[in-house]
Length: 502
Image (cartoon, rainbow, N blue to C red; front, side, top):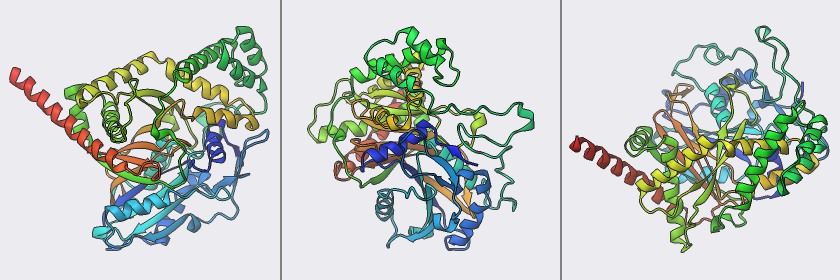
């Protein structure tokens, strides 16, 4: 059985093809306590555990039917007859003393290397030699296979919720049906009724390309939209729905494209190397800040990130843009029923981070106001989804140009993604997972990206950068830590004042 890539999944392949500096893999460094045996698990141990669970993730035994996109049809996911899990799980060791510096350097080098498209697009490394007997499991997965939320689901499947799980590997994790991906046929659940519909053929809608071109320059006449709908745009899309999508796309293009993200030194051509560093903040502290000063955990995370960006630009002598730095914030579109589904189910919000504001508490207030305005309005999210939807109707030979435009520096300065991870403790082969260090991809001409992942009461900010363009990344990291402290101090001062006034 083969499944065709969706246009959104293929976008991440096209971004890599367009520029050698774009690496479209996501990943994470999972650090574990020393096992009871005193030594990290063997490759055979880990392969045995994962092999028993891969039946629920058939995509992990598949490869692309062709390594590049183009032509009139998307590549398909096909069974890899030579698949061997031992080739996808390797071992490595840190040099002594195996501390933070050595781990960051190893991970940075590891994530600077692209995946081989001729093989299944994922791999893991058992990393030993960490200080105090710890070890790590480091994963790398191409973004065309799974998005950030989906990767957390997959990691949860491969880990255990207790040190000594049931010997049946599917006992804790088995879903009701075999998991495939968006637009892919799943094994039919007899209680579910009719078969899921086939995805629309990407060779149908040349009319959609005309629709996109007109939307970029002017309002699309309703009769053109109706005509495109009749020709098969988005399958059997009703003319009224097509009109709504096109209008939403036009509004987004006019609002975000014409206004444009400010130009900064963070949006120049970058190289192929990566540097991955982390900073941490307890979720309880983030909630305390939000409760006292106003704002969600996500608003606090954005404010901490903004503090780092402000310091970085100031240290370079750059004028701080009055409108702010524009962050592209991915939105999860998965429903509860799509737990463990692979592929990408995301849209985006574009939020201007107020780097001009010096006071951290005021910066949080402004960030919260901007975030709430975007969420309550809903037009931007609808517009982004509509653009992705309409762009997906272009044939592969033309879609690459659309894909590059959606990730261009004129639209946003950096990606900031916040993924809620497991809230409870997880284990692998008896070892307790202590933290997860996340990685977000860097598109061409985007020198910095931030991924925030929460796990077991803590939030880990994974800050990735091109080390040649951002040799001063420590300035950003130090300022992020200082911002977290400033926010917490302000929150406690506000709470003390409220208690005193009583």
